[in-house]
Image: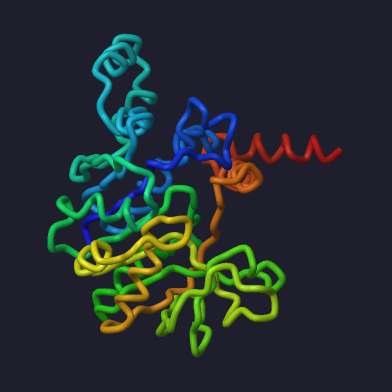
Length: 291
């Protein structure tokens, strides 16, 4: 069973400057809570019980957010603000733990994952990139379906989504023999980074969710620096494919790239409309602005 998830949060967030100069991009709020909380709750909904933050010295606010705040809780209790008290004490269920490890140098996603090796041990694990929010389709949790497929097949799972053909040059595109239906997986032959329009092997782009075997850590240790002079996770996955099956899982939900400013605004709109307390008023505001 997959019970551990690695969340690499050490990046500087240059796409989100100037805000990320002093605020971790993962802590920028989407409606009324930081983006990182949505990603953690996605993992928890899929059965993850240990969140491993691969972090940086400037990102202490992320760790603090998932910790208890005795002073704040006491103040809210004294003021009888029990609704707010409930919200901040129930960010995580009691059975879920959050720990952090440092990435001492910015050496790429593969290196960030490798930093969690001692915590993961011999267990298979998930990787969730916090820049991307994945919104469930109805009651479907895509990460949960990926874990279910991994448990059945023991094949690593890479989440993908269909993108317009004219935008394939902006993404990592998977090479597959057949295009799977939403919620299904198919054997993946490789990943092509930002192929020229008209040359892409498919229109399925890598989303930023992975279910990987423990052995990928040994492969990461052997992975030479690649693009950007960094240790790339995709290079280690290519090595894994030489001996093991890797599958592309086509998601059913919707993604929002909160690492980009426009993607962030899109997320605010969608999550704002669906907010249980603010949704109706927010819809009315949008209608008012359209006039």
